[in-house]
Image (cartoon, rainbow, N blue to C red):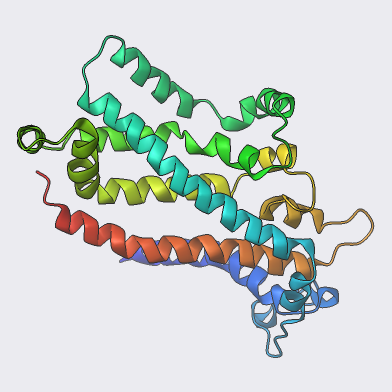
Length: 269
């Protein structure tokens, strides 16, 4: 009982800052810190909410930046799943010299923080004239080592009997991949897709280096630009933060149901 109470208290402590941000996104920016000292119930609840901050977002660069983030994340998931699943299939289904070394490089790739290589990589992209292009924003996210690792581990569990039966029926290796591996791997594909989406959605350093013009700016960068040197409209900043937080929450909540259904209906032993 005491652990349940402690868990509830810790949950409330984590929830209060989020509630404060949401509440202040429904207040004019001039009233953001009006109820902060002393703390009261009005600090976390607004009896006269207004959508003025959200309407102002439509006229700011963060509106277009959010659409850019959705586009870049969707392209990353679509192309990244095709690339990562193909790589994982090759590492799981084929025996070849150096397979262990290649797999080791894949594991090493997601142990190295991307921000550590972002600056030299951006120099290469500038030489390739990929700055301020959606191609430059998408490319680094499609070869995700963690996604390849998870898919490869799942592919190793596909029964060899199914593969042999497919080969006897005349399927080529692409047919085996398309009609046997992919249908049985929905849970892993959904999990890898969510991973690719979150990697791209929350990226800040790379879009800051590559997407510098108004047509290619992404949500996190546009949100940081709302904080001016002399004046910051915190109501607008909090509204933008809420929008950029709600979208991935909706995606995760929506696909979680399909993820659970896929796990329960896969039937792999």
